[in-house]
Length: 176
Image: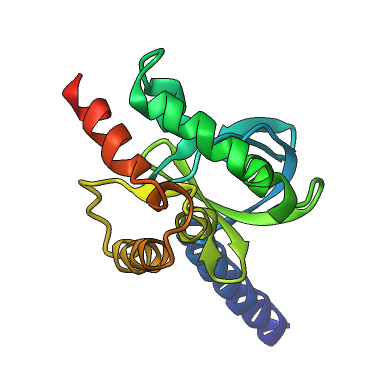
């Protein structure tokens, strides 16, 4: 009888240790994609809670366009860019699939969405030239991969790097 109680006690201790480890782990959360508004905004849900995700550590083309002044060189360049490559405006819609589960982590009021295996959405957007790494980003986990993705996009003159849109837009963004 005493052996039975000891076994239950040890199982209880093991269960509590497992629960404590899993409760405080920095693991990504599985969330369901509900909608994709732009390359900048996606709506996810976890249980009954819905939230908007914006890619972490980057400034997207859409964000540059929204923040640019009306009639500015930046806004005109982005409009011209989307006229030349209209499918890139809907890139995230084609990449992510609705009602699918994605691993999501939260950092600095933004989302890290694992969109392509170990690649995060931010990195994929940078490689396509649809985003640039935030100039002052200090993140040990992603800074290297984002920098490499940006070098790759620049070397192939993709997206924002094709017509030097980044130079026009980033300088306008930081003049404010």
